[in-house]
Image 1 (cartoon, rainbow, N blue to C red):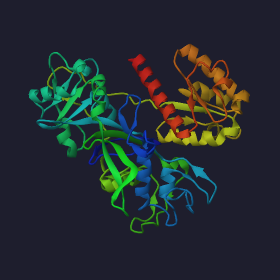
Image 2 (image 1 turned 90 degrees about the vertical axis):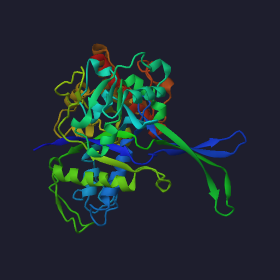
Image 3 (image 1 turned 45 degrees about the vertical axis):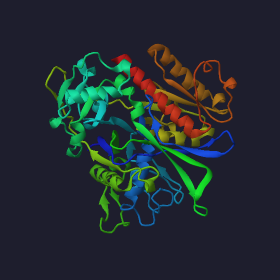
Image 4 (image 1 turned 60 degrees about the horizontal axis):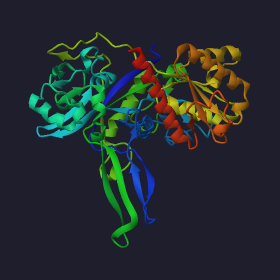
Amino acid sequence: MRDALTKNYLALAAEPIHVGARHSRIGGDGSTGAFVSGTARDIDGFPIVPASSIKGCVRALCSSDYGVAACDGKGWNCPQPHRCPSCSIFGFSNYHHGGSSSSLVRFSSASLLAIPVRTRGGVAWFTSWFRLSRTGLVPELQGDGGRWAIAEALTEGNLTSLMDFLPPDRRPARIDAARIDTRRWPGPPDVREAFSHLAVVDEYTLASLVAHATDSTTSVSIDPATGQAKPGALFEIEHINRWSLLGFEVTYLNPVARGIREFLNNKNPALGTLSATLDDVIRIVEGGLEKVRFFGIGGKRSRGYGRLIVWPMPLEEGAVALERKLPVPAEIGPTHVPRVMISYSHADKNVARRLAADLQERTLDVWLDEREVLVGDSIHTKVAEGVAGCDYLVALLSPASLESAWVREEIDAVRMREKESKSTVLLPVVLQGVATTALPATLKDRRVAFFAPYDEGLQDLIRSIHGHQERRRQRGA
């Protein structure tokens, strides 16, 4: 019996993708306009669709067909959350029963895979070998993998035109691109046109094209009573460009491991009660992903934003055929999922639980004592195992935790690990009520994440984890 399965997905933006939030902008005359920040970004500045945006949308779409009739689709008031497909698969914090459960699915954020640009010969896509390999289209290339390559439908003339998009310092003195045959790629045939018009560059060159990955539009809110623009009601909406290719992954956990044997579904009688297997979980979630092409994700749907066409990638890794010398390893090793341990005082358990759930939604492996330490376990032994086995220790610093002997012991143990490994493990997070001047001397020279407000601190923490992972990868390479 498989305990878990991770699948890669490829997505095409059929419309501009807007998943931002509104921020006020005050003009020099005191008038208030609004700027709508359209996209979150990863550590390298590339736009992403956050995992929470994908998961929340897919949950809502799945809940329309699968679930207990009285379920609200959000896990709050479901009468049978442990048997409800929506609540069991996507997790719940149930007010009716007072129980909670994490989800059976872990979404990653949708990362930009290829940037569309308009040339005299039509639309072409810039990408890199690194981004292609992360989606499962090709194994990660080594050696000459940083060399340029073009797909079969692009000509040398197209490549010359594409160079106009590059900053002068990134244009090679001589064009010597390998030729790719994408007909052997395992991706969906619907995006064959994009595959055949790919220009593959190194990751550093691709980073210079970030400005072409998003665009913005400006509009004015009209007062229906007067037919005139409302004072200060100017909106600028940023979005990921149409025809962008994105990639993400979903990890599915086997419901049997949670003791779930069947899903009770009376919301849609035609579908009936389902067995609770890994395949059923995948089928339900992919049904929701299929609907995204019609209902879209994010906001501004009335303005034509959000439709995303999603295809599951084959489970077998493919290979890319090149006419010239570009070595292709037989296979690429599994991606390491960082394990994050949360160190906290019992007084801050609600923050710790919320943080654990948010990190899990972003496909991180989270160690939380109340889940890992069972009745009868030695607390010292289990905590020591957690400290020794984690990639990062997130220390929640509050007035209570700064007085906690347990938290101090965990921080001291991790600092010893850092000295031995010469890599960052301890990630301090300052909660409300703590001034940086009150931090211990051993932490005052570290940059911390401030969880006031919580959401901004969370994004800072996640960006830092990915940044440290990239540093480790580069050192290993």
